Length: 179
Image (cartoon, rainbow, N blue to C red; front, side, top):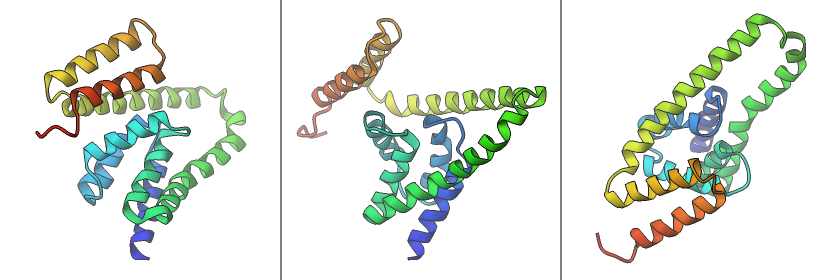
């Protein structure tokens, strides 16, 4: 029961402090789940994000569910998910009540400009951390460059890119080969 309460509290805190979407959550996950508690490692986080990208729903909620399930099974997944969405739900209710009254105020629009910049900085920090973990060998760099080109230059569907990258990973990094 103690571990379930800790899981609930950790994801309440993460849900209350995570702004900007899935990838901006990475620094918070790294601090709370990897460094402070050692519940998961960065490779697991990246696996969870990869799976969450191709499953329905919000990435951050899917990741909370995966972490909760890893810690305490289905009940842990449910607790982590509910805890993660409580702060955002409360915030959305409050914002919806008051936003229409204050949205046109210059101070509010300036505050949102600052928030967008901070979220951009968090995303850039996350991208740098991810890049360090991905480029461990030339095969990973090749998959990255091809994926980037298909996405940025040729505007290929992200679904096809993820499936193609998964196939490339299966071919280039087979589990049946000894390391």
